[in-house]
Amino acid sequence: MSSYLEALTWPVAIDPADTALVVIDMQYASGSRQHGLGAHLARQGKLGEAAYRFDRIDNVVIPNTQRLLAAWRAARAPVIYVTLGARKADYSDAPGYLRDFFKLCHNHQGTRENDIVDALKPMVGEPVLLKNTMGAFASTPLAALFDELGVRTAVYVGVSTNNCVDTTAREASDRGFASILVADATGTCSEAMQQSSLESFRRLSGRVVSTDEAIRELAHPAAKKAA
Amino acid sequence: MSADYINAFTRPISISARDTALVVVDMQYASGSRHHGLGAHLARQGTLAEAEYRFHRIESLIIPNTQKLLAAWRAAGAPVIYLTVGARNADLSDAPPHLKAFFEVCNNHEGSFENGIVEALKPMPGEAIVPKNTMGAFASAPLGEVFDRLGVKTAVYVGVSTNNCVDTTAREAADRGYGSILVSDATGTCSDRMQEVTLESFQRLWGRVVTTDAAIGELTQSAHAKAA
Image (cartoon, rainbow over all chains, first blue to last red; front, side):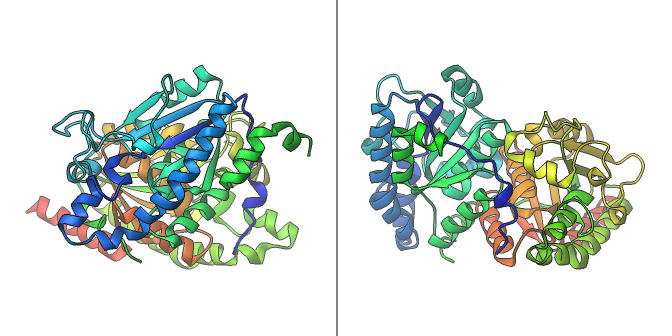
């Protein structure tokens, strides 16, 4: 497998002074087996097809995101939530390719499905940006928010790794922000898709770390810089 | 792989000579030729073999199939657009940090030989060439405006690399309301596995994946239907 591009990839560091934690689409719409997508599949008798996804969310993505949130809040570093869904109840604002998905998940502003899951509820004052696209930069002022908060680097967690997470992180890199994905706090439909998304991301787009590594570096940013 | 539950939601989109552009992505000497740019850099390091898959695919598959697609699009009078990647300034100061080292080793900036589109796929006079200094075209180029000016509702993407500039641009276009289609045998990257998984991911919600023959067949049929 080719590593020639990894050698050219920009090294980026986690520092509480300028590194945000960005939690993506951890909503009832597609982040819970009891609601939205999960409920839709259950009605069709196909919930088993998404067992990997929901097991990973319950057992890996949520617990690790809780740990990351606690670390970021303790370090007083910025925490930002991005959510997915239509703005309007008739879904007319959604791009064509996402409309059916939003409808089936009953995902528009104001629905229970549009809410962030209770286990990862934002604290008062933490910004929540609703996007109606996969990439946040197409439909939210995330770049302006990064600038306002002094964010130069963002650490991304949530679902789905290969869709909203990866697209938003790539968009951020293209706009000059450093991007880091957390391997064990992101998830998608299969282990193969997860691994390939991370592998692709590491080749030029940015860095991939574990939850432990992110928390350690946040606590000791200087050690990393000195090394 | 599992998870075809998402495929059921994916919107059908079609290829029509009236509103479907062929978009050729980053087929430049910088990273599309084993003799220049990235290829020359790896050769100097003695690691060109690592990229053998990439360059072989470009030479034996992507270039010939893109030539077929270009001929079909031109014959149908449908829009052809070229995207390129590279820094605007010779000192690379305008490049986003994650691409600077890559541009540097490829000597890829506006005006360099490496920045040029490969001879085998040279644009015809009047075809739009849209330079970008980012992976996704929408971050640094007015591709949306070019689409709107040409009446483009759907774009068919070919070129390199499937999982980077091609996929990112096609996703950005889908997020902005344009139909996006990737051509499986006219795109390429570092390995078959990365190629396949990128196409698989793209087919889940984002858009459609077709072969060169299917794209040409559908375009030609639409042109005949228009004439009839």
